[in-house]
Image 1 (cartoon, rainbow, N blue to C red):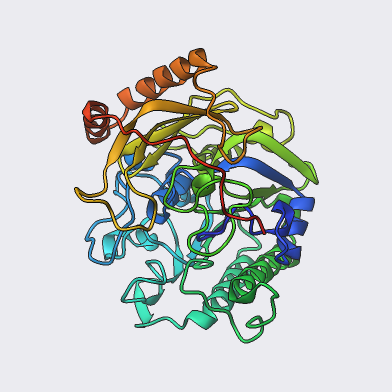
Image 2 (cartoon, helix red, strand yellow):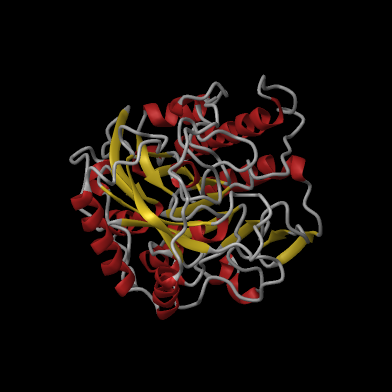
Length: 427
């Protein structure tokens, strides 16, 4: 599982970008590319929680970004994909950004991973340790060398695991800011340093694919590629509205590509609804693993194998911290709440808060990709159906989530006008 940090929906060639990404594009040509796949949250730590546990971050105990001053991390009661696979004889390694707790009890080596090499936070947080296992080998990791050093370790792990089943979780540091690229790639992209970083990430994907082939396990290895949320200050959401930190599509819809020769058809596109929470149940089915907790994700194996374009599933909720703001059901997305400030601006007097919308907004995100045309007044039955589903899902959530929902419903609704067309130009 290759997981980028803050990579936008519009940052890859196979998703319409002019940035060169030949290896990732080849991965898509040799496998399947999803066009409606969601990160589980618009920020780092919760999204990684959703991926590794198959559960909503608010259920799994990581509803917000973790910081160096935090003493906790992903709760021990949560099972990761690595912990699920260990009893099946899998060798496991995490290479890259962890961001689920940096104290000893929360590091990857306590969460089912045999080996770890990377930085425990985002690269804009300090101290920016580079760790090998549980040992800090650099107090301040050298940003320019992170991608090649990560890649070297990932390739070695694959080579060493050729005779055994293995799980490599490869969460890259980039393109999260501050950006840096090695001398081999710096200044080479027409799109500046951001393009340099993406091209180096693409190179890394190519090296991983070559390592899988060299190990002789290409036909028996599932390779997946995605991002933890939408783009931050740089990068492109494509035609989608919004960016990292928002529950507009640009904040949570991300690239997802999967390849498994003989199981996943080549060169196909899937427009069905998928989530990073679906990775764990799909892997469980494929590898014979047994999840220890009830999952919110579903097994998307039939979609991956091209047998189904869409699967029946409960409404997919969009959270920001403990607050539900949107829900997706089929082609419809309902906005029920929103924060009272635009992302990255200082909060207004009284502070940042989640407010229910005076009138919920309904968008057909299949035909209206930038969420410009609110059709709630024309589809009251759809609005009602999704609202009922939100209530049903929330009823099964932990007490803190239910309480937050009740408090939000009790607030004075916000007179926030329906949005204007997304101003973020696609690359």
